[in-house]
Image (cartoon, rainbow over all chains, first blue to last red; front, side, top):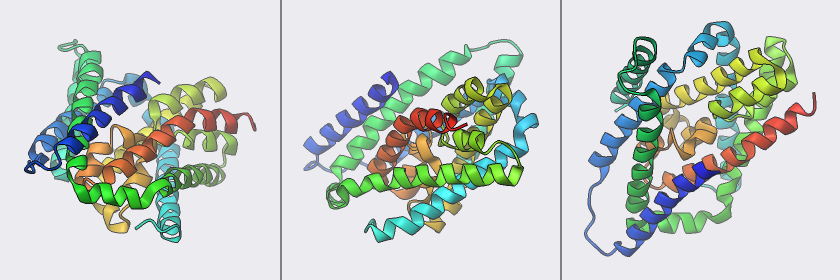
Length: 90
Length: 202
């Protein structure tokens, strides 16, 4: 639960500041965010790569895991694609 | 951009592996936990800022309203059903595969939880299946957006509130921020409950 708070607080703070600054000149933040994203992705890879328990489990359960991962993605995408228009989500 | 993302992911993976298996240059907790969380908080702040400064995106969210909750609920249904189907295909315990799929990509939750309920082998599977879901979401995102505007959000499941959020916003635009975050948030909230609820059917 602490995790959620840590994510929601900065998001809400950003939204509030952005709302207050909305009349100001637009700044292009895409370069900043791309930089942060790449460091984040690196760090995500780092935590996967240093997780020996995870890496050791892959050869044993790999095939079943791929089947489950691919099917959960396919079903989730298909369901959302089917349902979202009927409830008017553009 | 996907080139950079995959390069960063692989470089991080190799660095993490070397670091934890050939001497700790940097404490892995420091890199993967503290640095990651601090940067993620900074990024959420910046993305919130960019979102709120854009009047159109606020208007869009006003129009969507509570319908936004449809996405995580449909993703939950789709994932659990996919779990049942994969259990049938693989010829294994259907309840266990459904429970594993109800991790919605949150592998650090689904792994230990499935391990506790169904035993170590299922823990490994819960870990790997959800980990591959997150990995595939990042790697295939450029194809995903061609299928549907919301496809990356559906694919990312519970991870769209943190790890896959930046990549999704990058590809689907600033307006996807709230949809992706709220979907990931709802799925993260219900993941532990759905896993345990499904497991109790066994």
